Amino acid sequence: MSFKTLTTIVCDETADMHALNAAVALARSNGAHLDVICLGLDRTQPGFYYTGTNAMVLQDNLQFALAESERIESVIQQHLHAEDISWAVRPMTAQMAGLTPQLSSILRFSDLVVLPRPYGDGRGHEHEEILEAALFSCRVPVLVMPDNATLPDPISRVVVAWNESNEALGSVRSALPILTEADSVNITIIDPPQHGPDRSDPGGALCQMLSRHGVAVEVSVLAKTMPRVSDVLCRHLNDQDAQLLVMGAYGHSRLRQSIMGGATRNMLEMAELPVFMAH
Image 1 (spheres, rainbow, N blue to C red):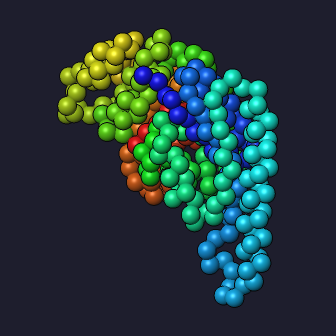
Image 2 (image 1 turned 90 degrees about the horizontal axis):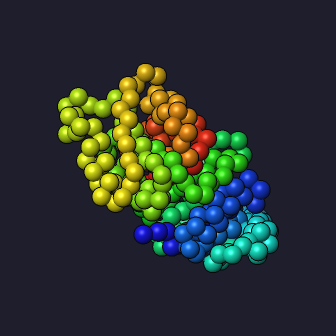
Image 3 (image 1 turned 90 degrees about the vertical axis):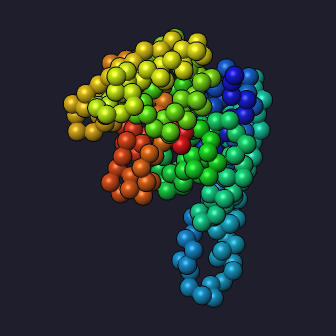
């Protein structure tokens, strides 16, 4: 089992290059094909212009997005020219209001989408929308690369954030091509419920499932000794010298997490290592 079709989306040929390099490395190690979408955006919001605005203004915005896409495409073509993998570059223009439907028709055929971190300096709303299009509209797993991070080859040490949710289990299943090749996989459970189905053996059923796939797995049960689950998890990642985190995405409402925060958003903001997630 391995990933055979990978996709990455480049909105900025400088800031997003680390995600492209990770996608190339993953395509090489899996013998996969890589599709690169070079995205030029018309960021004009609907209703921004008054009624009767000259159509030339709207056309100028689309032409700017097209030029942006073609510039990115040229840079990516040169970057990939010497790579020994199967790849294709696809220029694409979109308005922000129609970005998700356009992406969904493309990303749904991917085994995995590799994206840069959606939050932080230099990140616009489009990066979060791209992530959510992959996770929710296409139900495709996503590998999120922190700024300037590299993807280890091979990925030897993996931590799985386990909370018994369907989202977490979906992420584990999607990540099996990586987990089966890792030297060690640590199932991490933080403050498990006292009356949950696995109360007598936290993580036992998941451990058994992974063991049958030949995964070298162990379980860590941690107390919530810090204000947020993400704080405890980040400390544990450092203690484990982990190279990858596997977790479920958005167990609560995305709107709630965008306003109040949540484990998914916090980890995407804080993690300094690649994060593999699915919903």
